[in-house]
Length: 235
Ligand code: TMP
Ligand code: ASP
Image 1: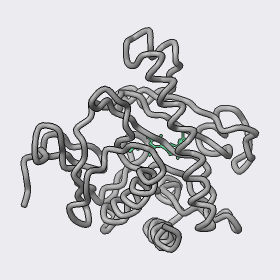
Image 2: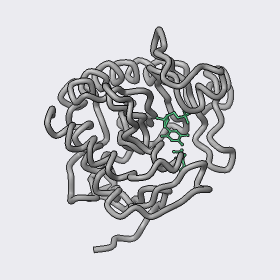
Image 3: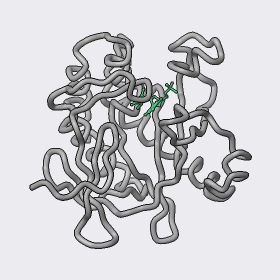
């Protein structure tokens, strides 16, 4: 069944839900990086990301974090609460990597003394630039209390997920979250998957995430499959 698409993003598309308070999200097999400049179809990626994100969201719900997930429809589709997405991405880092290493000259793999939090404007045209709290409130993207609440939840999510992944022999290096306004509350939306996290094998530091695609390391989906296999053994 192909319902009419309300919105198509780079890795997911969205259709109407069962009522005005819900939506259906479909995961696609498309992998993109560098704001869509690099793009490839990786057959099975949608199913893997959906499975991984669903496991994580159910784990977070059990641990007191409200997410958009209502129920799983099939291998690549979920029914979610229809939230108004806050137009910033929240990035949490435990270990220096990626743009942090590049920008601040800190070697990849250097442990950070405290988790860092940063915000990026959700804008493909502008390349998701980093944006600070005073900019966000100044242009009315979110209020001070919403920013505090997103930061508070993000740090709790970091604690919960770092603990979960470590049981699976995986270090949670960094990750990106998106929140939405729903019935007067801020809830966790979007996905948490190897597309949106850096996940390294704790022993070997082998990358199991989308850096395999970004950096042409090969065997992209083998990394994703390994993440799912290990998460299933601890969830
Ligand atoms: P960065 O080091 O490139 O800033 O990425 C930090 C984290 O955010 C990393 O886990 C990947 C994730 N991320 C996304 O989910 N979407 C994006 O568009 C970007 C740039 C990063
Ligand atoms: N998600 C972004 C893109 O599709 C960038 C990234 O994940 O590296 O271009």
